[in-house]
Length: 457
View 1 (tube, rainbow, N blue to C red):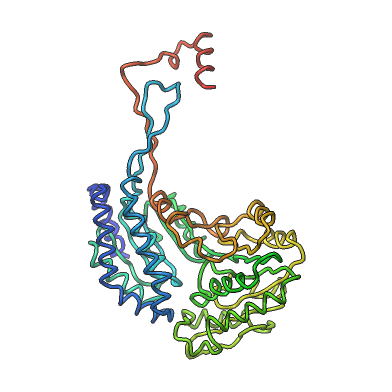
View 2 (cartoon, rainbow, N blue to C red):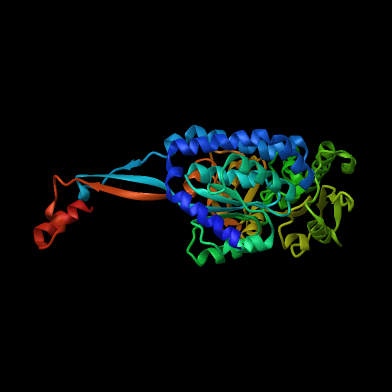
């Protein structure tokens, strides 16, 4: 507790010197971060393999490469983002100059999850550094090897009074949340997210919550079923389903259900092989606790595809459950694993009603060739983000923000959105002293009232 408090004092003292606010300092910091990542890249891949069984290809595609992409995008655009933004002054304030100035919040806490432990620690950090903050990063204890590498590479890149890593589990999380940060960025589950929000309320600390939920995939009868199955299988079983935006369940139109499921089975075999336990590129469940939780979700359900598992390797086959009742265990919580419940619907109205009756999801995926259906779904359903005729790729860009809505989170990040998230925008009016219109000063009178109405129309 004392060590964390002392770290906070160090960072607060360093931040008040103002060095982090210059563009030159921020750019150098981002370059140092990139250099340190490249220096430790092999160790990062090894850590991800040990924590989650990720192959080198998947580690680069979904974690390290994503961080490089974000770094490069932010470095290219940061010079524009830090400039004051001019806005038009109203006539009533003539003569004056109005502008918006972005400033860092100060001390930022970034709490990362275990499923993409490297990318979801470093991506928010990039935004926090770009905005000029000091940061404490708290990686997940469920990915201990990646956590250790993150600590090592950030210690190599930065002094702890600027960027620091606090490792540990629940006790360290609790201690950190008792401190007075200027901003908290949390990625994880809904239940812990509520606790973070409660703790932040003690100091009225602004927060971003990147949560999850049951993200639906709707397959409408006009869809290219083969392509839909291919892209669904990729998005669902990437990282063994341990992805916050993975399709959590499928709603497929009854008229094409049977044909669609044949394609799903075909693509599972083509991507992962007849025996996934011989597939060195197939990742494993993070730990025994989550492995056993997933097995309970399959218990007593009708398994259409897969269902096999290995306790030795903590691997579960890509599994499709059908038919599934709405009150089945797998429909009561976010699956967060390689288990895919499938339900059917008669009309698109039925599918919409099903989604509307549940919490707002982090993502929604729609496969259709019908533009009217596309417009209807986008108009009537609220969700964090999503794809038409694909899955999960909407988060793989720095040009759009990523975040949830309602129960799936608040706030967004990536690219400019990250800079905005970790910045406070000050609205400034600089008024001329050469002219001072008398209309606002007493005494008022009828003439001033008429002029006031002209100015404020």
